[in-house]
Length: 93
Image (cartoon, rainbow, N blue to C red; front, side, top):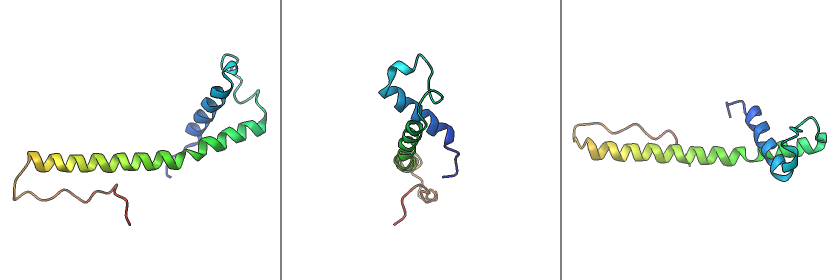
């Protein structure tokens, strides 16, 4: 990935922690008052969802591209109009 995901990973880890420990949210205890091993565990869990999120975003982009191409052919049904460029978001075999 080209995007820096550190801040997102931290936000997800924090929400995972507070989901399990709701009493800590009002004390704002993440990550200073949490055991370091626990912090690393939640950060690892948060990092594990990135490939899933990336695949879903890629699939959504490909679907949106295809929808746009179908709409373009429907509204601009010109036999002399060129085809849309290849979908860059499709999975390559």
